[in-house]
Each structure stands twice: as C-alpha cells, then as structure tokens.
Length: 302
Length: 242
Image (cartoon, rainbow over all chains, first blue to last red; front, side, top):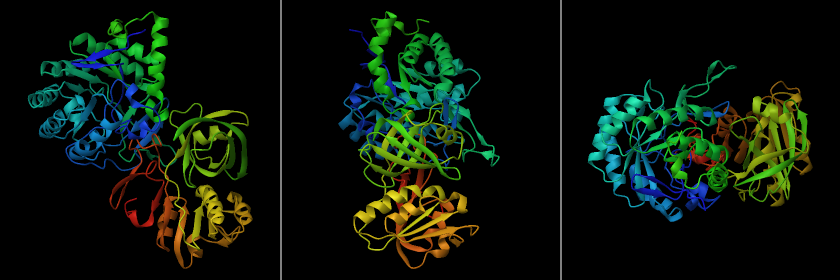
C-alpha cells in the first residue's frame, strides 16, 4: 500500500491533488462527474469582498499546449460565498477546503480573510496577490516585496488558519518575494499563478482578448512553474503548493521532487474534467514503479 | 454531462466550408435541441464546442463550419477515427406550447434549429422556417426542413437563391421565435419579434461552467453561455451589452 498522504501546515491531506482556484468553480459541476471526496482538497474560485462581473468577452484565447484567460476574478462576493457556495460545497465535499481570496487593497484582503477564517469547512486560506487580470489590483501587490509582506502581516493578524500566499511568476525574482512572505509570517506558498500573455487575431489585426492581455496556463508553463517551485523551495522553510501546467501523474511526481508538498491542477480540468480523478488513480501504480513507498518522502528530493 | 468516445461515421462537405459530421456513440446525455458537445480535436489544447444538429440512439449529427485551424483539422478526419467528446452540454431550447412559432437561423447557426424543428413537429407544432445565407453556395439543409413538411423561406444577401436580403426582411407578425445565428443577426431579429429564445456563441474555456470564460451580463446578474445557455430568453437579454 503506497502512502499518498501529505501535510500542509496543520492540514493532513489524503493525497496531494487539489483542483486549482478558478478551474473548478465551487465543485457542483464537477460533482456531476465523480465523487469529489477522493480529492486531497479543493481551492475554490477566488473571492473578493464585493461581487465582480469580471472583464469583457472574449476572455479566452488558445495557444500551443495552453490557454490564456482574462476572466478578471468574476465571483459573487464574499457574503454569497460564505452563505451559499461554501455550505453547498460542504454537502458534497466532506474535507477542509482552501479558500482563495483576492483584494484591491490591504483592507479588502483583511476583510475577506477574517470572514473566511471563521468558516468551519475552510482548512487553509490562499491569498491571491498575483491575478494578472485586474488593473492596479492583485498583480501590483504580488510584484512588490514590501506589499506582499504588508498584506501577509495584515491577514495573519486577523486569522487563525494557515495562510498561503499565491505568488506571481511575472516578476524578476520570485525567490525574494517568497522570502518576504515567509518573513512576514506566511505559513506556506502557492505557486505559480498564470504568466502574463496575449494573442493577436491575424485577420482582424487586433488582440483576441477584450482585455488585450491575460494569464497563460496549461502544459506550456509546466517547466517554468517547476523551476520556480524548485528555486523557492530551496530558499524557504515553509511548505510550497506547486502548480502550473500539471496534466498527468508524472508531472505530480516531478513537481514534488522540485519541492512541492502538494500540487494544484488547473487548466487540465477544463479540457479533461476527470483529470484529477485519473491522476489520483494512477499515482499508486506510478509510485510503485518508481520505488516510492511514501509519496511525501520525495518532497524536494531533486 | 459525460466524457465519451465517439467514432466518425461521415464527414462530408455539404456547402461552402460546411461539413455534415455524423458520429456513432452514446447520445443518452443529449436531452434537448440546442444543446452542444465539446470535442477534443487531436493537436489542439482546448476542446471545440459544436451545437447538436440532430441525434437518435447511438447516432449524433453535427454540422460545422470551417472557421479556423481546429475545424480545418477536424474536416480532414475520416470515418473510423475516434474522438473524445463531452456530451450533453448547455441548456438547449425549451419546447413551448406555442402553435405557430418562427424558427429563424443564419448560416452556421442553422444546424441546431433542424433538431428543434423536428421535435416541434413531433409535438404537432408547425413552425415557420426562415433561413438566411450569404449566397447560394452556402445553403444547406433547406430540403431537410421541407421534408418535415414545413414552409421554408430562404434569404440570400446577393439574391442568388430565394429572397434577396436579410432574414429580418421576411419576418412578419412574429409573436414567438426560436433563433440561432451570428450576433448581429440575433440583435436585428430581436427587434422584429415579440418574444423568443436566442442561442448565443462564445469563445469557451471549459464548456461546462467552471472557468467563467463565457459569462455575459443579463438583466438579473450574469449567465454562463456554456452552462446556463447557450439559449437565453428574449426578456432576460441585455441587448445593448451583449
């Protein structure tokens, strides 16, 4: 029997597979396809204080082995998430979830963190300081060491649950940002968010996305994400959740070897809604083949 | 929704850039006309959404237009090849008990209206069909609609077939319409009808409601074209914003 369990701060997961925020909604659509309780956890759609419609359409452009989105944090707002989406998810998923929160000011992050901290099925709070799709908002925090530290400290002050800061890859040195978050008291880190990207329609000669730019995810970004997880894991002592282009069980092993304690699956859910299930089913056999008895033993082994 | 494997039975050019695509597989997830399937075309990252033209047990008919690299690649596939398909997506048209509705379609928006017309006829409802195309080279399925025993009016922009002009030129006294076609056509048609259901197109990420890639504002909030649509009701659509 292969041991797939892993730990994120005080949260023990049955396995390291977590659907990434924004690629799994609040679970209800996916629950039509399989019992979500096989998952390690679920990172819910990013939530802001007030409801947001997001950016104009088109919000989706394709690229080789990837997708560029400019959804722009569409969400129903924190109250509806707490009163409707989270209780609803608790009915179909009986494990602690990851509450992903976003904000446009330190006060908004604090407000959202304080609210979700009190919710019983929230096991961990993931603070998104790295959405590339909102002007003058999320990304500005995530690219500046001091601002990341300021948000981290402020959120830590009002919460009891583990705080994981979700980092942007759109920076010159992700390691220094990671260290700032750690020094400011972050319990862990999630990386990477999407890479800023764009496409142009050669017939109309205009950008495909209404927002012009968006975030690239999917298999195309896996080696970049892997490199960043490797660098960050070497530089910090707190756990890292690795994500970015993971689309098969082998990628999970590779990401954990780079230093991830758990992984999130994002864009792959959009093209294969059963991908998390397939990966979880394949992991024991793959571990067996690779001589892994306890999956968490390989974290950072590369 | 289910992820299923379908086998290509037929992939035939039937009009300029239009292919009649017949597949064998489990169609039990398709409940209503106007629903769609999301096809994984080998070599492309995202799936491609296609509206269902018609279906019966173990047979799915789609009619698609070659508009880009994905549909170009699909048009080169042949009988016997298999495809991964997410089936039974979207809400589809609600079959209303209205005696003489209009069915109004334009170009690549015509296919789902055939499946709809067929099911309305089965309920003893006789829709009046109006189909618009650019020119005679692009016309398809007119005879199939006629075979259902329905009155069909065809318009072409250049007058090379049927009535010269737009579908809106021949809409007269329409209380209720089922509509599918390009956005400018939907907008023009809505001004000529009192009520109805309109099917929309969008660039989608997932096709089943989790990514928020295709949300549009409606009067009471927003709807995801893929999950809450693609068919929206006349009265909920914000025509100036969509």
